[in-house]
Length: 264
Ligand SMILES: *[C@@H]1O[C@H](CO)[C@@H](O)[C@H](O)[C@H]1NC(C)=O
Ligand SMILES: *[C@@H]1O[C@H](CO)[C@@H](O)[C@H](O)[C@H]1NC(C)=O
Ligand SMILES: *[C@@H]1O[C@H](CO)[C@@H](O)[C@H](O)[C@H]1NC(C)=O
Ligand SMILES: *[C@@H]1O[C@H](CO)[C@@H](O)[C@H](O)[C@H]1NC(C)=O
Ligand SMILES: *[C@@H]1O[C@H](CO)[C@@H](O)[C@H](O)[C@H]1NC(C)=O
Ligand SMILES: *[C@@H]1O[C@H](CO)[C@@H](O)[C@H](O)[C@H]1NC(C)=O
Ligand SMILES: *[C@@H]1O[C@H](CO)[C@@H](O)[C@H](O)[C@H]1NC(C)=O
Ligand SMILES: *[C@@H]1O[C@H](CO)[C@@H](O)[C@H](O)[C@H]1NC(C)=O
Image 1 (cartoon, protein in one colour):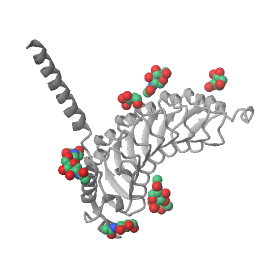
Image 2 (cartoon, helix red, strand yellow):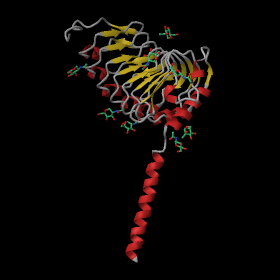
Image 3 (cartoon, protein in one colour):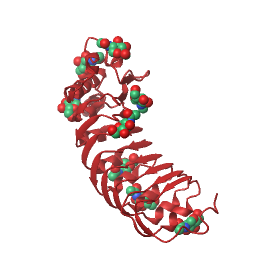
Image 4 (spheres, helix red, strand yellow):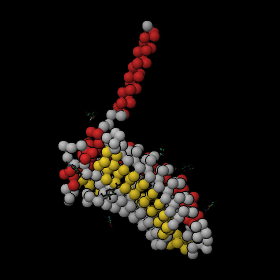
């Protein structure tokens, strides 16, 4: 009697647990389709009629700009670059749980980025360059454990850079150029040891931290056209892989060090 009650409660527990598990895994290609239909309805101008192609009579995997993975048949890439779209990003995009690459370059997308994008744990590439996105860079950008490339070039992002984005330990390229960002570049940038390209030009940054000197993979560092003051920071001459450095358009004083080329 006691024993069967015990077994029953174990069984109930297991049932409850498995329904939680399947509940979490319940998304499928239909979820991806609803997310993309929400995206479509948030695009208010499509002068080349590209979205006529996004028809529910065929699988989303055949839609222009959409790529599905072979293994799960789920959307892995959404590339709407150079399509001359105007619109905003709906929160529903956060439901594309298999997404690896998001590319919206050179359109007229505007507004702020919905925090639901932080659910996209598989993202490796985020390219939103040359649009009109605004607001601060959200602190949830720190939540992409596999991110390799972050391109926000040529938008209206303002405020300081949240130090959480320096949680992105797999990042290789960070491009925040041509925005309205200000303040010091956070010293946590020294944590991103895989960085190869750092593009921070054409903003209002006023300080480069000495920790940048720790980054020995960086080949390109653009900090021109900012509000940097004082002597040229010594740390940059310590970056052993550096081949391209731009500093012009700041208020830096002093000449370049005599030993600038000793490490090459
Ligand atoms: C996706 O899941 C929903 C319910 O969770 C179901 O109604 C639908 O048929 C599924 N779609 C596919 C293509 O399996
Ligand atoms: C959309 O375009 C793709 C690629 O050009 C094509 O394979 C597909 O058949 C088109 N779908 C529709 C509904 O026009
Ligand atoms: C996205 O599409 C554009 C234009 O078709 C292409 O040039 C670019 O390489 C694509 N990007 C990715 C990441 O596939
Ligand atoms: C997708 O996301 C939206 C908004 O974030 C939400 O309302 C919707 O219920 C989500 N789930 C599915 C399966 O579409
Ligand atoms: C992207 O947009 C920028 C700004 O409008 C422009 O300078 C650049 O040439 C565009 N790039 C391409 C490949 O169209
Ligand atoms: C930092 O990254 C870890 C591991 O990917 C993650 O668990 C954590 O939530 C991230 N922190 C922030 C502030 O994004
Ligand atoms: C950077 O690294 C230091 C030391 O390893 C650690 O304490 C700090 O939390 C890291 N910062 C971020 C934003 O990940
Ligand atoms: C330059 O690098 C060396 C060794 O890699 C380190 O000991 C030193 O503190 C660095 N100097 C600066 C200014 O970053």
